Amino acid sequence: MPQFTDIFANRPILADGAMGTVLYARGVFINRCYDELNLTDPGLILSVHEEYLQAGAELLETNTFGANRFRLARHGLAGKVAEINAAGVRIARQAVEHLKDKQAGEAWVAGAVGPLGVRLEPLGKTGLDEARAAFAEQIEALTSAGVDMLVIETMPALNEAHEALAAAREIAPDLPVLVMVTVDDDSNCLDGSSPAQAAALLTEWGASAIGVNCSTGPATVLTAIEAMRGATTLPLAAMPNAGMPRAVEGRNIYLCSPEYMASFTRKAIAAGAQVVGGCCGTTPNHTRAMRSAMRALDAQARVVVAGAAPALNTETPPAPLGERSKIGHLVAEGKFVTLVEIVPPKGIDCSKEIEGARLLAQLGVHAINVPDSPRASARMSAQSLCIQIQQHTGIETILHYTCRDRNLLSIQSDLLGASSIGLRNILCLTGDPPKLGNYPDATAVFDVDSIGLVNIVRRLNHGLDIGSNSIGASTNFTIGVAANPGVPDIEQEIRRFVYKVEAGAEYAITQPVFDLRLLEEFLKRIEGHRIPVIAGIWPLTSLRNAEFMKNDLRVSMPEEIMLRMAQADTPEAARREGILIAQEMLDAVRPFVEGVQVSAPFGRYTAAAEVIASVLPKPVSE
Image (cartoon, rainbow, N blue to C red; front, top):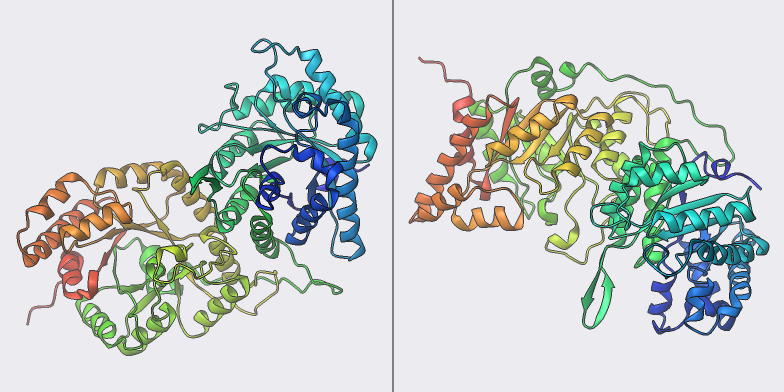
């Protein structure tokens, strides 16, 4: 039997998702014993397993989560522990063999062992020896039936995890055993133990791999996994719920989308997880999206050419930063950068935008920033507007590029095309989900997020495509990223910023800044990974605009600014006050950052020019 580390040494492995969620969706009442279905309706269980395999799962857990004597006794089935567990293994093995028959890939069967559902001493009346005996009974049945490994999961307390693991080691000392705890909102085990403590003890007790499953959703599981990574060298597994269930029309519904679970997959693997899967609320649709995310990561990491030798991966280093673009030169020289954002039109006429860019170029603005369908709205492509602005006005542009609408092939094609037509600046963004825009039913792609996109652009800059094949020359992009000093979860923002810098980001543009304190704190937090930062400046146009920024876009907006906008008694007074606030903010941030980007709300380019005038070159006197 191969060891766990042998099985998962070369690449991350995708586990399946929830069994109970799918069974419930298919009409099995919640008060049924789902484990008993191994005996009474094996075809139903087989169909769920096969659906997960078809979605891309490689590690299949048996339908035996609650098949221990304590939980089965509630249904009068305590005497059928061995029979139910053996049937569970048989059904899962049948699904895997079907997969092999179709030559569709390889998969493993993991015997699922859940908590006993009773309190153990000293908090309950069930003794530790009784608990170990119950686990041993179930594990004996699973191992005798021929599982490839054991998954001891959703352990609420370390003493219960210890008894389950000890039973596994007594019965099958050479079998790989993955042990996963469940955590609370603070990412601690339910007995109060920290993830690091759990990792250290489970390692000491002889687990083959450890991890976190179930819990309150992807965010808490990711935090716990990151903490575990520093306390063990064992392989890690991450299998969260699809968030917390919400009551919708009388039913508990898990609202985490497949796209969100795909994003979690990328983050978990980046954090060191070697096994990723789902728990309550996840379905084959989630698994399919997670598989897509893993394929994207795999394409970036390895060359996979069926039946052929890998292509030569000869790198072509990019030109020095100062030679790639005007923005690259300014950043490399440490000069103050001035940008203005021009949003593409909703139609095909971009004459207003071109005239705005011409005005700004004449005033001395360094470059025009062009968003990519902001707020998921349908607009002219940013790439088209960028090239038209450059052709008609001569001013350099920065192309915003989002991952929302493109798969890996499209991303690579677009970036190669952008380089070939003279676009040299890329701002790498994840993108707003379609539900925020005017076509909420549109589907998102998100093969990678902004961190993965930076990696792709960096590889193209070194003359390599996402499969490590040579493209013949460097794309020579100057790579920018976004940052948000005012986001509520600043710890996550800092982590992502560090990942972006490590991936190859060369400068950053912030969301609009209205609270200098938050910007200063953010800059302190990134000192160890500091790249040039360009502060976003937004001239407010009205109180309603300020309310939208604060409540819809979650931009930190001090009450003083809200009050100033509220006191403006006419539309013109409100616009003047917004410009004044923006000018004050520009002056305030200037000592701390390497440039500013001023937005032009509703196409008011003269307002943007007025805000940025203080840092533009002064006209030569006649």
